[in-house]
Image 1 (cartoon, rainbow, N blue to C red):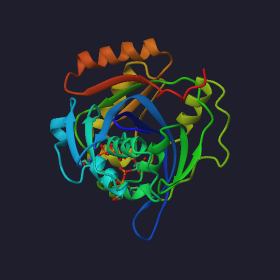
Image 2 (cartoon, rainbow, N blue to C red):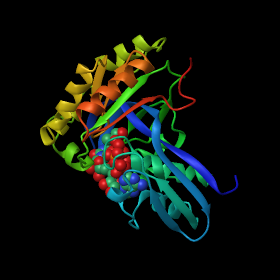
Image 3 (cartoon, rainbow, N blue to C red):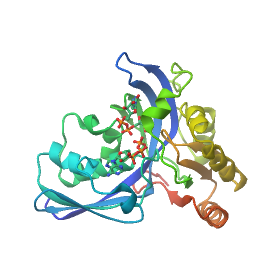
Image 4 (tube, rainbow, N blue to C red):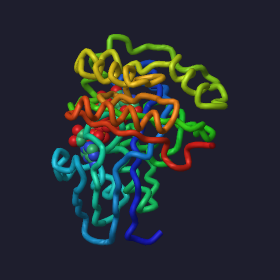
Length: 275
Ligand SMILES: C[C@](O)(CO)[C@H](O)COP(=O)(O)OP(=O)(O)OC[C@H]1O[C@@H](n2ccc(N)nc2=O)[C@H](O)[C@@H]1O
Ligand SMILES: Nc1ncnc2c1ncn2[C@@H]1O[C@H](COP(=O)(O)OP(=O)(O)OP(=O)(O)O)[C@@H](O)[C@H]1O
Protein backbone atom coordinates (compact mmCIF):
# COMPACT_ATOMS: atom_id res chain seq x y z
CA UNK A 1 0.00 0.00 0.00
CA UNK A 2 1.31 3.41 -0.88
CA UNK A 3 2.12 6.24 1.51
CA UNK A 4 0.95 8.59 2.91
CA UNK A 5 -1.39 6.51 5.03
CA UNK A 6 -3.63 7.45 7.94
CA UNK A 7 -4.10 4.61 10.39
CA UNK A 8 -6.43 4.62 13.44
CA UNK A 9 -4.87 3.17 16.60
CA UNK A 10 -7.92 2.05 18.65
CA UNK A 11 -7.61 1.76 22.42
CA UNK A 12 -7.39 -1.77 23.82
CA UNK A 13 -9.60 -2.88 26.68
CA UNK A 14 -8.96 -6.00 28.74
CA UNK A 15 -12.56 -7.03 29.53
CA UNK A 16 -10.98 -9.78 31.64
CA UNK A 17 -7.35 -10.18 32.70
CA UNK A 18 -6.48 -13.36 34.57
CA UNK A 19 -2.86 -13.69 35.71
CA UNK A 20 -2.24 -17.43 35.85
CA UNK A 21 1.45 -17.74 36.71
CA UNK A 22 4.91 -16.25 36.50
CA UNK A 23 7.87 -17.44 34.43
CA UNK A 24 11.40 -17.72 35.78
CA UNK A 25 12.32 -14.51 33.90
CA UNK A 26 9.67 -12.58 35.85
CA UNK A 27 7.11 -12.21 33.04
CA UNK A 28 3.55 -13.21 33.85
CA UNK A 29 1.23 -15.66 32.07
CA UNK A 30 -2.05 -14.09 31.08
CA UNK A 31 -5.52 -15.16 29.98
CA UNK A 32 -7.45 -12.12 28.75
CA UNK A 33 -10.49 -11.19 26.68
CA UNK A 34 -9.36 -8.18 24.66
CA UNK A 35 -11.53 -5.80 22.63
CA UNK A 36 -10.88 -2.52 20.82
CA UNK A 37 -12.99 0.63 20.94
CA UNK A 38 -13.65 3.56 18.59
CA UNK A 39 -11.74 5.95 20.86
CA UNK A 40 -8.05 5.98 20.04
CA UNK A 41 -4.94 7.66 18.69
CA UNK A 42 -4.38 8.31 14.98
CA UNK A 43 -1.08 7.70 13.22
CA UNK A 44 -0.11 9.15 9.82
CA UNK A 45 2.89 7.76 7.96
CA UNK A 46 4.57 9.47 4.98
CA UNK A 47 7.77 8.96 2.99
CA UNK A 48 10.68 10.91 4.44
CA UNK A 49 13.54 10.71 6.88
CA UNK A 50 12.64 9.04 10.18
CA UNK A 51 10.87 11.64 12.32
CA UNK A 52 7.93 12.05 14.71
CA UNK A 53 5.51 14.93 15.20
CA UNK A 54 2.86 14.98 17.91
CA UNK A 55 -0.56 16.61 18.16
CA UNK A 56 -3.66 16.02 20.27
CA UNK A 57 -4.57 16.49 23.94
CA UNK A 58 -1.82 14.25 25.41
CA UNK A 59 1.02 15.28 23.04
CA UNK A 60 2.72 17.56 25.57
CA UNK A 61 2.65 14.95 28.33
CA UNK A 62 4.17 12.29 26.07
CA UNK A 63 6.84 14.51 24.51
CA UNK A 64 9.11 13.37 21.68
CA UNK A 65 11.71 10.80 22.66
CA UNK A 66 13.80 8.48 20.46
CA UNK A 67 12.26 5.45 22.19
CA UNK A 68 8.69 6.44 21.29
CA UNK A 69 7.03 3.21 20.23
CA UNK A 70 6.13 4.70 16.81
CA UNK A 71 9.82 5.27 16.06
CA UNK A 72 10.78 1.88 17.45
CA UNK A 73 8.16 0.23 15.22
CA UNK A 74 9.48 2.01 12.11
CA UNK A 75 13.04 0.95 12.99
CA UNK A 76 11.90 -2.65 13.51
CA UNK A 77 10.30 -2.50 10.05
CA UNK A 78 13.55 -1.07 8.64
CA UNK A 79 11.78 2.01 7.21
CA UNK A 80 12.69 5.70 7.32
CA UNK A 81 9.34 7.46 7.46
CA UNK A 82 7.80 10.66 8.74
CA UNK A 83 5.26 9.80 11.45
CA UNK A 84 2.59 12.08 12.87
CA UNK A 85 0.86 10.89 16.04
CA UNK A 86 -2.44 12.39 17.22
CA UNK A 87 -2.23 11.47 20.92
CA UNK A 88 -5.80 11.27 22.16
CA UNK A 89 -5.30 8.56 24.81
CA UNK A 90 -3.83 9.22 28.25
CA UNK A 91 -0.25 7.95 28.56
CA UNK A 92 0.60 4.82 30.62
CA UNK A 93 -3.07 4.18 31.28
CA UNK A 94 -3.73 0.48 30.66
CA UNK A 95 -5.46 0.88 27.31
CA UNK A 96 -2.45 0.05 25.18
CA UNK A 97 -1.81 3.52 23.75
CA UNK A 98 1.86 2.97 22.91
CA UNK A 99 1.25 -0.59 21.72
CA UNK A 100 -1.70 0.54 19.56
CA UNK A 101 0.48 3.29 18.03
CA UNK A 102 3.32 0.86 17.27
CA UNK A 103 0.89 -1.61 15.69
CA UNK A 104 -0.67 1.19 13.60
CA UNK A 105 2.77 2.16 12.23
CA UNK A 106 3.48 -1.49 11.35
CA UNK A 107 0.06 -1.77 9.63
CA UNK A 108 0.65 1.43 7.67
CA UNK A 109 3.98 0.01 6.48
CA UNK A 110 2.46 -3.43 5.77
CA UNK A 111 5.24 -4.76 7.99
CA UNK A 112 4.82 -8.04 9.85
CA UNK A 113 7.96 -8.39 11.96
CA UNK A 114 8.57 -11.88 13.31
CA UNK A 115 8.52 -10.79 16.97
CA UNK A 116 6.30 -7.71 17.35
CA UNK A 117 6.08 -8.49 21.09
CA UNK A 118 9.64 -7.16 21.47
CA UNK A 119 7.97 -3.72 21.25
CA UNK A 120 5.50 -4.61 24.03
CA UNK A 121 3.34 -7.53 25.17
CA UNK A 122 0.21 -5.82 23.81
CA UNK A 123 1.57 -5.15 20.30
CA UNK A 124 0.60 -8.55 18.76
CA UNK A 125 -3.08 -8.20 19.78
CA UNK A 126 -3.09 -4.57 18.60
CA UNK A 127 -1.88 -5.63 15.12
CA UNK A 128 -5.34 -6.90 14.11
CA UNK A 129 -7.22 -4.67 16.61
CA UNK A 130 -10.02 -7.24 16.62
CA UNK A 131 -11.59 -9.04 19.61
CA UNK A 132 -9.33 -11.86 20.77
CA UNK A 133 -8.48 -14.17 23.62
CA UNK A 134 -4.89 -13.36 24.55
CA UNK A 135 -2.72 -15.89 26.38
CA UNK A 136 0.92 -16.61 27.16
CA UNK A 137 2.77 -13.32 27.66
CA UNK A 138 0.42 -11.77 25.09
CA UNK A 139 1.64 -13.61 21.97
CA UNK A 140 -0.90 -16.48 21.87
CA UNK A 141 -3.97 -15.06 20.15
CA UNK A 142 -7.30 -16.70 19.37
CA UNK A 143 -9.63 -14.43 17.36
CA UNK A 144 -13.17 -14.24 18.73
CA UNK A 145 -16.25 -14.37 16.52
CA UNK A 146 -17.93 -10.98 16.01
CA UNK A 147 -19.30 -9.71 19.31
CA UNK A 148 -22.69 -8.26 20.17
CA UNK A 149 -22.68 -4.45 20.59
CA UNK A 150 -21.03 -3.05 23.72
CA UNK A 151 -21.30 0.51 25.03
CA UNK A 152 -18.47 1.78 27.19
CA UNK A 153 -17.56 4.76 29.32
CA UNK A 154 -13.79 5.00 29.85
CA UNK A 155 -12.57 6.84 32.91
CA UNK A 156 -9.06 7.76 34.00
CA UNK A 157 -8.05 9.92 36.99
CA UNK A 158 -5.16 11.30 34.89
CA UNK A 159 -2.53 9.73 37.06
CA UNK A 160 -0.09 7.47 35.21
CA UNK A 161 0.51 3.99 36.60
CA UNK A 162 3.62 1.95 35.80
CA UNK A 163 2.84 -1.54 34.46
CA UNK A 164 5.87 -3.26 36.10
CA UNK A 165 5.01 -1.65 39.46
CA UNK A 166 1.48 -3.08 39.36
CA UNK A 167 2.66 -6.61 38.44
CA UNK A 168 5.21 -6.37 41.27
CA UNK A 169 2.56 -5.31 43.81
CA UNK A 170 0.37 -8.40 43.17
CA UNK A 171 -0.12 -10.61 46.19
CA UNK A 172 -1.15 -13.74 44.20
CA UNK A 173 0.35 -14.60 40.80
CA UNK A 174 -1.17 -18.03 40.43
CA UNK A 175 -4.86 -17.56 39.69
CA UNK A 176 -7.33 -19.74 37.73
CA UNK A 177 -7.63 -19.11 33.97
CA UNK A 178 -10.88 -18.40 32.15
CA UNK A 179 -12.87 -21.53 31.16
CA UNK A 180 -10.99 -23.41 28.41
CA UNK A 181 -14.04 -23.20 26.15
CA UNK A 182 -15.55 -19.74 26.00
CA UNK A 183 -19.36 -19.62 25.74
CA UNK A 184 -21.12 -18.25 22.65
CA UNK A 185 -21.78 -14.58 23.29
CA UNK A 186 -25.27 -14.53 21.74
CA UNK A 187 -26.23 -11.11 23.01
CA UNK A 188 -24.88 -8.21 25.03
CA UNK A 189 -26.38 -9.49 28.30
CA UNK A 190 -24.68 -12.90 27.90
CA UNK A 191 -21.32 -11.26 27.24
CA UNK A 192 -21.65 -8.91 30.22
CA UNK A 193 -22.65 -11.83 32.49
CA UNK A 194 -19.57 -13.78 31.38
CA UNK A 195 -17.24 -10.81 31.88
CA UNK A 196 -18.76 -10.14 35.33
CA UNK A 197 -17.97 -13.72 36.38
CA UNK A 198 -14.32 -13.20 35.40
CA UNK A 199 -11.69 -10.86 36.90
CA UNK A 200 -8.86 -8.42 36.37
CA UNK A 201 -6.26 -9.90 38.72
CA UNK A 202 -4.17 -6.71 38.55
CA UNK A 203 -7.01 -4.56 39.89
CA UNK A 204 -6.50 -5.10 43.66
CA UNK A 205 -2.77 -4.34 43.40
CA UNK A 206 -3.42 -1.26 41.25
CA UNK A 207 -5.99 0.05 43.76
CA UNK A 208 -3.46 -0.39 46.59
CA UNK A 209 -0.96 1.73 44.61
CA UNK A 210 -3.61 4.22 43.46
CA UNK A 211 -6.82 4.41 45.54
CA UNK A 212 -8.34 6.83 42.99
CA UNK A 213 -9.02 3.75 40.82
CA UNK A 214 -11.63 2.61 43.37
CA UNK A 215 -13.22 6.08 43.08
CA UNK A 216 -13.39 5.68 39.29
CA UNK A 217 -15.07 2.25 39.62
CA UNK A 218 -17.58 3.58 42.17
CA UNK A 219 -18.31 6.58 39.93
CA UNK A 220 -19.05 4.34 36.93
CA UNK A 221 -21.34 2.14 39.03
CA UNK A 222 -23.16 5.17 40.46
CA UNK A 223 -23.68 6.40 36.88
CA UNK A 224 -25.51 3.17 36.03
CA UNK A 225 -22.84 0.85 34.62
CA UNK A 226 -23.90 -2.82 34.50
CA UNK A 227 -20.26 -3.63 35.22
CA UNK A 228 -17.21 -1.51 36.09
CA UNK A 229 -13.64 -2.83 35.89
CA UNK A 230 -10.08 -1.66 35.37
CA UNK A 231 -8.35 -2.35 32.04
CA UNK A 232 -4.80 -3.74 31.82
CA UNK A 233 -2.55 -2.46 34.58
CA UNK A 234 -4.72 0.67 35.00
CA UNK A 235 -5.50 3.25 35.82
CA UNK A 236 -8.21 3.48 33.11
CA UNK A 237 -11.50 1.85 34.13
CA UNK A 238 -14.40 0.99 31.87
CA UNK A 239 -18.12 0.87 32.59
CA UNK A 240 -20.44 -1.26 30.43
CA UNK A 241 -23.85 0.31 29.69
CA UNK A 242 -27.08 -1.07 28.19
CA UNK A 243 -27.28 1.43 25.31
CA UNK A 244 -25.14 4.04 23.55
CA UNK A 245 -27.51 6.74 24.87
CA UNK A 246 -27.02 5.53 28.47
CA UNK A 247 -23.24 5.61 27.99
CA UNK A 248 -23.36 9.14 26.52
CA UNK A 249 -25.56 10.36 29.40
CA UNK A 250 -23.21 8.81 31.99
CA UNK A 251 -20.19 10.38 30.24
CA UNK A 252 -21.79 13.84 30.48
CA UNK A 253 -22.73 13.40 34.16
CA UNK A 254 -19.25 12.16 35.12
CA UNK A 255 -17.44 14.86 33.08
CA UNK A 256 -19.45 17.58 34.84
CA UNK A 257 -18.75 16.13 38.31
CA UNK A 258 -15.05 15.35 37.70
CA UNK A 259 -13.55 17.98 35.38
CA UNK A 260 -10.01 16.77 36.20
CA UNK A 261 -10.61 13.23 34.94
CA UNK A 262 -10.46 11.89 31.39
CA UNK A 263 -13.81 10.46 30.33
CA UNK A 264 -14.95 9.11 26.97
CA UNK A 265 -18.01 7.20 25.71
CA UNK A 266 -17.31 4.67 23.00
CA UNK A 267 -18.59 1.62 21.15
CA UNK A 268 -16.52 -1.21 19.79
CA UNK A 269 -14.13 -0.33 16.96
CA UNK A 270 -15.59 -0.91 13.48
CA UNK A 271 -15.56 -4.53 12.40
CA UNK A 272 -15.82 -5.91 15.93
CA UNK A 273 -19.59 -5.98 16.42
CA UNK A 274 -21.94 -8.39 14.67
CA UNK A 275 -25.25 -6.51 14.91
C1 LIG B 1 -1.04 -5.70 31.35
C2 LIG B 1 -1.25 -5.71 29.85
O1 LIG B 1 -1.63 -4.43 29.41
C3 LIG B 1 -2.40 -6.66 29.51
O2 LIG B 1 -2.89 -6.47 28.22
C4 LIG B 1 -0.01 -6.12 29.12
O3 LIG B 1 0.39 -7.39 29.53
C5 LIG B 1 1.12 -5.12 29.26
O4 LIG B 1 1.53 -4.84 27.96
P1 LIG B 1 2.64 -3.74 27.63
O5 LIG B 1 2.29 -2.44 28.26
O6 LIG B 1 2.84 -3.80 26.14
O7 LIG B 1 3.82 -4.33 28.46
P2 LIG B 1 5.38 -4.44 28.19
O8 LIG B 1 5.92 -3.11 27.82
O9 LIG B 1 5.65 -5.61 27.30
O10 LIG B 1 5.82 -4.85 29.66
C6 LIG B 1 5.89 -3.93 30.71
C7 LIG B 1 6.21 -4.71 31.97
O11 LIG B 1 5.05 -5.43 32.41
C8 LIG B 1 5.40 -6.65 32.98
N1 LIG B 1 4.76 -7.75 32.22
C9 LIG B 1 4.20 -7.50 30.99
C10 LIG B 1 3.57 -8.52 30.31
C11 LIG B 1 3.54 -9.82 30.89
N2 LIG B 1 2.94 -10.83 30.26
N3 LIG B 1 4.10 -10.03 32.10
C12 LIG B 1 4.70 -9.00 32.78
O12 LIG B 1 5.19 -9.22 33.88
C13 LIG B 1 6.91 -6.73 32.95
O13 LIG B 1 7.37 -6.23 34.17
C14 LIG B 1 7.28 -5.76 31.83
O14 LIG B 1 8.55 -5.22 31.99
N1 LIG C 1 3.49 6.32 21.33
C1 LIG C 1 3.46 6.18 22.67
N2 LIG C 1 2.31 6.39 23.33
C2 LIG C 1 2.25 6.20 24.68
N3 LIG C 1 3.30 5.88 25.43
C3 LIG C 1 4.47 5.65 24.82
C4 LIG C 1 4.60 5.80 23.42
N4 LIG C 1 5.87 5.54 23.10
C5 LIG C 1 6.49 5.22 24.25
N5 LIG C 1 5.69 5.30 25.29
C6 LIG C 1 6.03 5.01 26.70
O1 LIG C 1 5.42 3.76 27.04
C7 LIG C 1 4.92 3.77 28.38
C8 LIG C 1 3.60 3.02 28.42
O2 LIG C 1 2.64 3.77 27.75
P1 LIG C 1 1.27 3.17 27.19
O3 LIG C 1 0.35 4.31 26.96
O4 LIG C 1 1.52 2.24 26.06
O5 LIG C 1 0.83 2.33 28.47
P2 LIG C 1 -0.39 1.49 28.79
O6 LIG C 1 -1.62 2.14 28.25
O7 LIG C 1 -0.32 1.22 30.25
O8 LIG C 1 -0.17 0.17 28.00
P3 LIG C 1 -0.68 -1.28 28.32
O9 LIG C 1 -2.16 -1.27 28.39
O10 LIG C 1 -0.17 -1.95 27.07
O11 LIG C 1 -0.02 -1.68 29.60
C9 LIG C 1 4.78 5.22 28.78
O12 LIG C 1 5.45 5.41 30.00
C10 LIG C 1 5.42 6.04 27.66
O13 LIG C 1 6.46 6.89 28.12
